[in-house]
Each structure stands twice: as C-alpha cells, then as structure tokens.
Image (cartoon, rainbow, N blue to C red; front, side, top):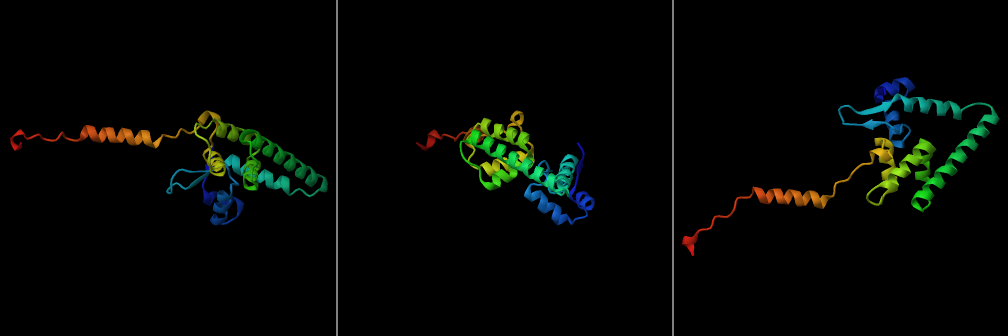
Length: 173
C-alpha cells in the first residue's frame, strides 16, 4: 500500500498542511496512521482516492443524482444505526453515526464485531471506534490489553528476588 505524508497531500489538493491535519483529526482519512512525531502522518493512497470519489459523487450537478446520493447516505445511515443498536443494545450518538457512516457499512460491521469480541467491556465507544478506525483494528487483529495488576505483581516478584537477604547477626542478641 502506498502512503503519502501531510505535505504531499496538501500539494495534491492544493490546500495548506493545517487543513490536511484538520481533515485527519475529523476522520476524513480513517486509515491514516501516525507512527511517531518524526515520521508524521502516513495517509494511504486508497483513502485519498475514496475521499476524492466521495467529493465528486456528492457534487454532481443533476438533481436526480443528488436525490439518489441522499437516499444512499440515508440508507447507509439507517444500517449503521441498526448495526450499532444490535451490537450494543443502545442508541448511537450523532458523533458515532458520523464516524461509522463515513467508513461505510462493511467497515462499521468489522469495528462493531471487534467491539463485541473485546475481552473487557468497552466503556468509551467513541474512543474505541476512533482507535479502531485509525489503527485498522479488525476482529482478527483484536488488541490485547495487559492487566496492570498482573504486570505489577510480576515486577514486585522480580524486585523481591533481586533484594539481598538481610544479614542476621547472632552476636547482637
């Protein structure tokens, strides 16, 4: 997969780098990743193609195509809401609907399945969904969270093994 950085995308769209960063924060490029500060954002070419095609699709001039686009987005929105309600048994917020509608119904179902298979209950669905989108989580690449208490216990056991045993002076008694 080919990736572009923020500067290259800004030149491609004839926009400022700040605009591209704002688009990244708003989720317009859902599969973009930021590995570290030095390398910066890496935006997949597929996201750019999808973004360009969606802009062209939304800005067609005939009234019939605008109605069909609206109908398409409305049915997609309804499917996203239905899928979210089926998995979580709660109604999604408008922000959640926005994120999930943007990535499409197939990706929404993958994310919701990942959420359902999570070993711990998801307390922050928006945060989980944002991370799933940006980091490309799928049901087969479910992130594993280490339990802090187990890690602390293991560290404490290692510390106790490394401690010298106290010297017992029988002459002081």
